[in-house]
Image 1: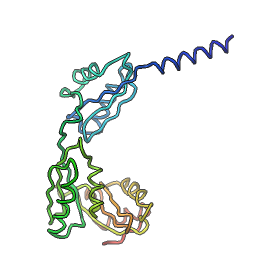
Image 2 (image 1 turned 60 degrees about the vertical axis):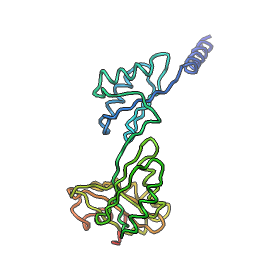
Image 3 (image 1 turned 135 degrees about the horizontal axis):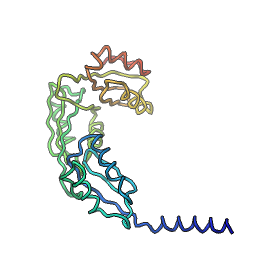
Image 4 (image 1 turned 90 degrees about the vertical axis):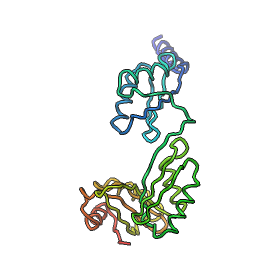
Length: 244
């Protein structure tokens, strides 16, 4: 008899989960600028009875909320964010909204005006890209884009298609850039090398061409003093860098 009761209880629990009215609601939070903001959004929402999962996208600045519609609603969750957190300007996400973003990339392979023209043409044709500006001397490319149509990661991939392996670009004097050839980072090893080098303190961004091992790096000079110190940091991570 006891086994029967246990089985009935398990069936009831499964049935209850099956009939839960699972829904999804997306909120735009333009004030959500960083990981700390994302954490506060998740903390506020997951404390609500019925909320099952919260995912955030800092580029679009949206929160995607999965919840049990029998316990709460999208409107209630939106109201909670506006009244109990600093995100007073929160509103329902609209997939047709133009979400304007700007990204700066450092393309060390830029050599001349011809490179600038090639980048403007190839990247300018990407859906969602609104404007492309190239500073040949600094090898910096500034792109304005609609994050609802294209992501920063997708733009980096489009640079690769055009033959440029870019890293994050900065307009301050603290960040420097370097490029090397890393023989052991070719082919399938490239992604592992990118992950390991991105873990090195002071390295801000890494991109590698898997065909020839060309490795582009942005780094913080307050942590890594110069290119020589960077080469040593790369070696400590298990890779031998040859200066281009």
